[in-house]
Image 1 (cartoon, helix red, strand yellow):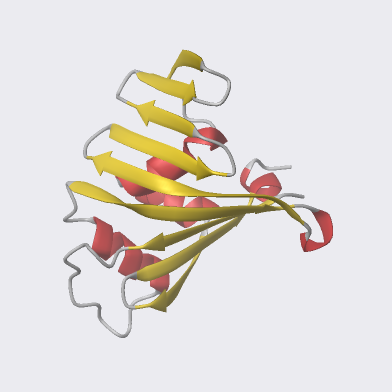
Image 2: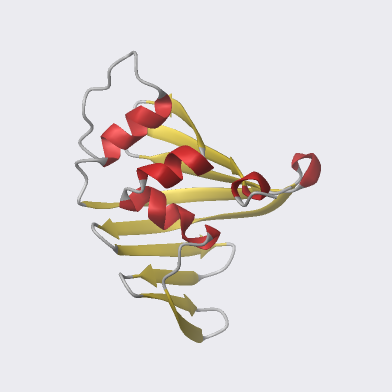
Amino acid sequence: MMKFLLCLWLAAVPLVSFAQTGSDVDDLIAALAPVRQLQGSFSQRQYGQDNALLAESSGKFRLLRPGYFSWEILSPDNQLIVAGPQYIWHHDRDLETVTRRPVTTDEEMTPLQILGGDEDALRKKFQVVRKAEGAFVLVTDIDDAQGE
């Protein structure tokens, strides 16, 4: 069983007033709804069995709705992933390689789906916890999300 953790801070985004009766996932959806472009930083952790930390990364992201997204990993390695409506480009700066592949709807697209406004993917694949005003933590069990 592998868990995926994505921390999302929306401090630079003009946020709507959240109703106190709404759930955290509804608050995140409401915050993302008016956003047409967004940039920020991320931290990501992947956990294995017994909650052992398997991998940790951090970097920057940029979003232009609908359909354009970049995910730049700055630590521990240096990679740039750019997605458009048809293709995903992956530039591994350390290995000096670039690959291009068609966009799919598989698990690798989850951050893009969430930030791109896929409400269904957010509700089905993540538990959303609001940590502070404009700060959300998204957690999913990858095996459960894949139906295993």
